[in-house]
Image 1 (cartoon, rainbow, N blue to C red):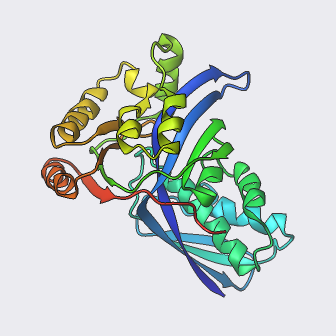
Image 2: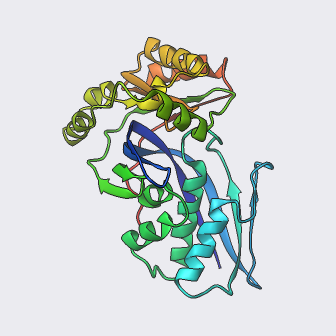
Image 3: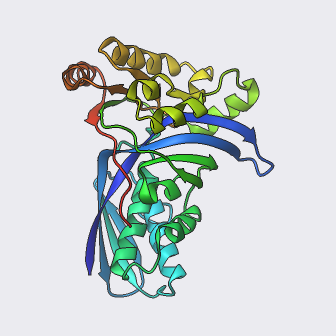
Length: 289
């Protein structure tokens, strides 16, 4: 048995940190959106009971450190099929260390694929609950689309889908340490927060301009020399006509929302001459489970 799934990249339209928890983690409030940049996942049943992975990025771990492998094991354990063996082939296009949940998206795609192979024994909510055991963003990536996420990202609320548009994503040639940014945030505190309520209203009204103007990520306020590069990318996006631009997750990818396809293409061409990675994508709606 073989099944193919696509893993959809995630963007943060807003990202807020609301509290530090007793367990050392942080409570988050985020509006998240999947987009048409995908990894391709192929899952094949094999003899034996080993779960093995391979990837076109040679530096990606393919053992239990990989969320996709852990997701497969979690699904098999949940349905009582631990003695089954599988190979997972990951052909990645989502950049690593970009704040786009590439690893979480791969794990979610594996959960969807395994569920298909076993006759859809779980519904969406059951898969999302299982996904919480694998990683915080995995639950959102199970269905994707447009969601409000609370807690560590596992408490999800469906939102009105984002209107169609062009989104230019650019990742500079560095990544940013998530634990490092959280440490700096804890040291300095926050002065500004996203207008989450305004973002929800703009989504409900399908007001693309209102959405773009309310995009905000609190990590951009953290004092870090690399934020200068993030700001330069944002300025380029805005100079070429983006309605709004923001960093996603803890970076280092930055994206801008365009309502003019020609302007988006011109901007992408400019950034591709200067940066390691740049793509034009569109918002996606929820994946059928």
